[in-house]
Length: 334
Image (cartoon, rainbow, N blue to C red; front, side, top):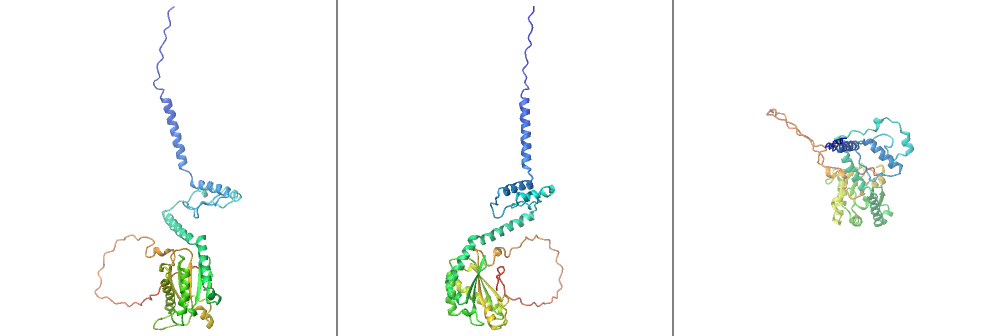
């Protein structure tokens, strides 16, 4: 018999295509997963996060959580919401879970609001209020005799303290120059306030009886001059002038009706408003004065029109050179 001829097996040179195809498939699946993770619905993610925090009775780590857009409405949208309350909101339309569009103006307004809120929280923190309580206690200890005689009154208002000084021990009637006895009292008070960083507004108050003299044309000038006299003595004693502000309120913040001589005497007073924190006595907007809220865009100027050669002079009334500083919120009893 003849020997059977064996055919040689041909080598497959295209075997690399199979692992290559598997690799391409894995890369495609990888990028699909990455794309799906990058397009997470932020509204649903926030709801899930808030629900988990509420379930574990957690609380935000920061005083002012940073959010993109407005808070979505839906189950779990409120961080303090309980699981039972969330269950009651199930079945709401899915459109309510979508995140709100974010505008550039919203970002600017939120940034300025967060900055002002942070400054407010810094000045009204528990440490600042505790330090303000220490100031009030020191003043009460230093002025105990006058407080007992009701010539000085210390009032606490939470985020500021009032120290009311009747003008009977400061100024004669219609005069803004401090008496010698008043200087000793105010120096002792200034030495008590000097170690603390709190801002101080010095307010002058009068009764409603009109005054018109060579020195003061109205009660505005008299009240401001009396406050200025106290501020000058404070600065001479060593208090930083940046901590002080003068407010002349005249007869327009009476503590009592000006119907009796005793009430008018009580309305003639100087009031020290000691603020919490170490900010400016006129408020947080001090650095923004003189700056426009929105920078104006330059507009093309119309061509100048020829003016007539004859002009008429106009007389203007002089404006009073009196300015008033802002008041603290609701200082009751003034």
